[in-house]
View (cartoon, rainbow, N blue to C red):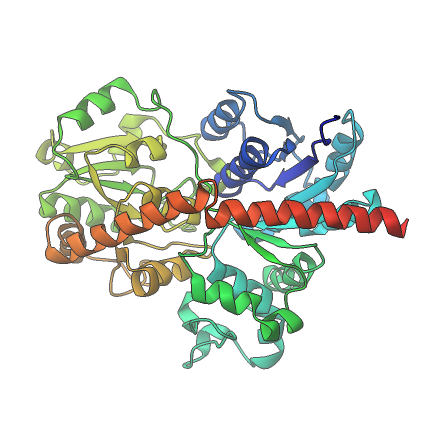
Amino acid sequence: MEKPKKLRVALLSSPGLGHLIPVIELGKCLVADHGFEATVFVLPLQASRAEAEIIKSAMTPKLLDIVELPPPDLSASGLCQDAAMTMRLVVMMREARPAFRSALEAMEAWPDVLIVDMFGAEYLCIGDELGIPKYVFVPSNAWFLALFIYSPALDKEVKGEYVDRTEPLEIPGCKPLRPEDVVDAMLDRSDQQYHEYVQGAGKILTGDGILLNAWEDLQAETLSALRNEEFLGRVVNGPVYTAGPLTRPVRPAGLGKELLEWLDKQPSESVMFVSFGSGGTMSAEQQVELAWGLELSQQRFIWVLRQPTVKALDGSFFDVGKGDAGDEVLSFLPSGFTAHTRGIGFILPSWASQVEILSHPSVGGFLSHCGWNSTLESIVNGVPMIAWPLYAEQRLNATLLTEEIGVAVRPKVLPSKKIVGREEIEKLVRTIMVEKEGHTLRDRVRDLKSSAQKAMARGGSSYESLCKMKEDCQMRIRQIKKAH
């Protein structure tokens, strides 16, 4: 008897590790657990060490084909030099569409399914042209998705700037959103990126469904709201499938020899890991306060350090992994800091193997910018967090982690609004590492770690959700063929 033909899926990732990693992991999951053949199309930010390592590790063992698209020429796009990160991503994806079409045409056989990440919603029309089902992958959580797809309704309902409101923003069936927690694109309604954001919300609804990097037990109420007929009838056209947590696997040789030896010498759960993702930066003044806060806490730490910036909190996003020389980065620390913390602290210039660090038994806390990738990596390794949101949707994530999921503490005032002083940083670190509240958070995050493992295992909620997506996809293929 002839074996059924495997479905060929083309996945498209927009630039940045926050999109590249989960798109690659989704592709690997579809191949290994659900019988697809997958090609991932990547639009790299830069020829960076971080991206190169992610792509290389994805090809060993070779589950996927990876096609790197040429970087688009933005000279004629009219994009300002200091354009916001979201706007730059939107324009890069728009300008890369011809290259993606050419890459599809160069494939040995057309794909049967198209999955684009949320910045590639404009590519869904290519699925229509090819006569194949098309889906959008949102590499974030259900609350973010609810806000995103409800934004056209909010655009009509709310007058004036969202951030000037005193009342929370209401989203049907979801936790109300504080105005200060809106995503960056909603901070200024006169900015072009706001209009792109609202239009993008409409575009992702033209797909046959939405895949989400979350799992049922993590956000049961919000997922229920998204699937409610009231929400569904007015906003969401296709099903919402949970596919997460999709995180990069730990590589045994991922840590450098010196760092591994240092970690192996530390007591269990005694090290605070400090990192602001691939793009996060802070002012020189805030960096000094953070340094003294870490020293005052008297806790062991690993700090991924990069040059401070005064321009934007996402100042490293488009230079990810390029890094600075170690001595140059150290010059931005307060005088005497490295001497006072010798043996207690470990400084890593610019970039680190984050998953490998979080998975080490000595690590017991994570001071994080709350990017969704980093959040999931912390949860699946059972590590509680200090939420330090900087940009994009990170303020929303920080509120979710502290007030709903219960795996983090945070400063009293947003770090993007006010310098967080060394005494408050000391208290936050000690809360996670030694206080009773930290033990409560650790118990909660361990429960979620177990829940996440069950979701991804055969028979788990995310496994079954992707099985359902495959069934729906096959049915949609039959419908399209019948219609033609």
